[in-house]
Amino acid sequence: VQLQASGGGLVQAGGSLRLSCAASGRTGRSYVLAWFRQPPGKEREFVAGITRSGVTTVYADSVKGRFTISRDNGKNTVYLQMNNLKPEDTARYYCARNTSPFIERATMTRDYDYWGQGTLVTVSS
Image 1 (cartoon, rainbow, N blue to C red):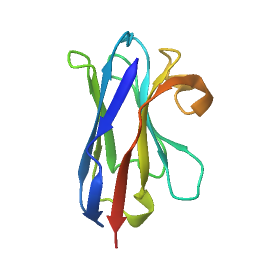
Image 2 (tube, rainbow, N blue to C red):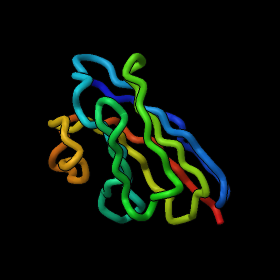
Image 3 (cartoon, helix red, strand yellow):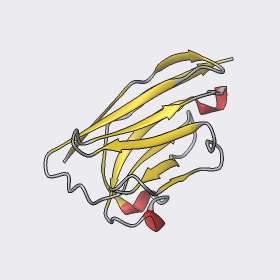
Image 4 (tube, one colour):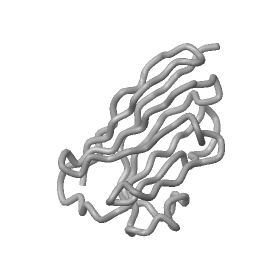
């Protein structure tokens, strides 16, 4: 399984970006897909997760109401729409595939077996 993230860049505070993550190989469409991020000098943290159907999602409190995760199973792609970006959103963003289809296991890095290479998001004040 390969995950290829794209869409990062430099944006001013209050702006928007849309990240994409294309999956290839034996992706197993039943699994939860998620976005994590790692700010400079900090540990990787959960951002958002989504089940196969796309009906159930979960978000970190810090991004609720600003970020939206979605997926297109026909394209094997998961998206992260980020609005009203803040300087504290600056990080490298990673997409990942969970080992299970259950959203209850979405927030822990140890429950993910495949990771993309990350895409850098920089928000200037």
